[in-house]
Length: 87
Image 1: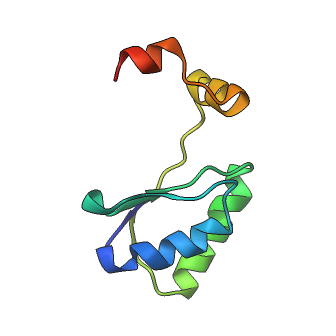
Image 2: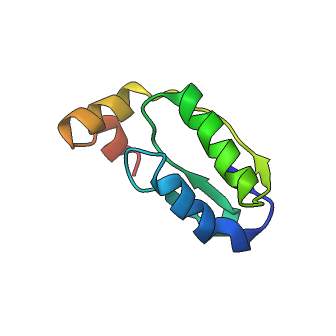
Image 3: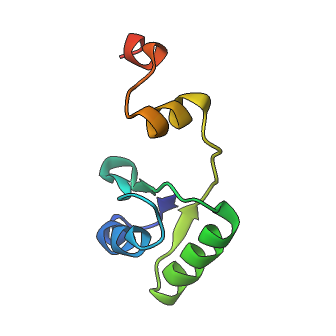
């Protein structure tokens, strides 16, 4: 998700920490933050409610289904050959 104000990134990271299955990924220059969750529908609703209660404005929010590479990494802990080749 992308926030309206960069100053809200740290508070949003704290809110998302409890909603995800791992720590949020913060991209400060782009005022974006992402987190991996197990059940997207309930998690998205919960996150939007928490951010609204905290007065944090969202500029853009989206759900992304995991790719096969994402699943492989989560399962094995190793990147695929295609991920390594693109670096």
